[in-house]
Image (cartoon, rainbow, N blue to C red; front, side):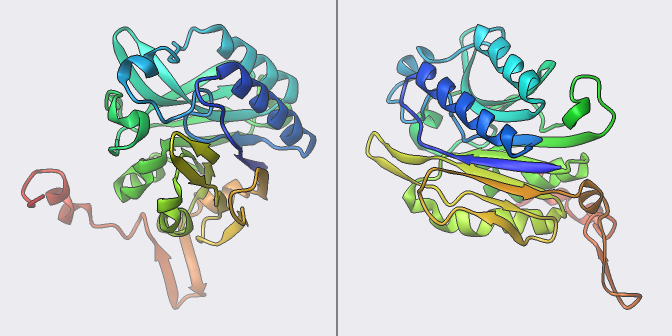
Length: 287
């Protein structure tokens, strides 16, 4: 299968312009044969909101007409894609991402880890567990046979190794991470995707935005990493681009790595000792 990672500028508080950008990039990725396309965090809305009220004006529900249009383009191009948006659910507001397939919205995710930055200062913390969703691929995308297991996360989530470990243990083949890393987060962009893909032996697509918005410049440096942590594709900087990389799902699913046949074998899932990890979540450690 073919992974695609979209690095693009985002128009602040202009969903119509951003929807057009998405449609154009999906058409381009489809021509290359992409199966799964990953867009940045808050792709539909922009990120730098100065109040909850201002952000609420751009938030939508999962029943919004835009999702029907997105499903239509997914069906037309026979692909799946993830993108970031602001989700309104009653009086609640979430920094969210959606996984869109030819059959509609297969899944949505609400950002769990919130930094003191941009719209994350105003949204509600994600209130659902991390989950992995299986979707059909390619020519069989509407009634399919072969499936890909996608785990969604958003930006700051990846700075917590527990996030990707939970998704990995749940069976993710690919992590779809939409992000808005500013220029001060270049070390994260360089180091974290490779580390998380190596730790969990899976594919990691980190789609960052570019451009300047309300005083913040975004660094780009998007990447696609393979199960061994090797970069398969990398943006050189803050240019607008689409990265592509082939993915072998069986490679991601086989966690047993023989570095030297018979004498150096590791399995980062089978070799875990979770009975010694409970202090991470039981409150016994200082924090």
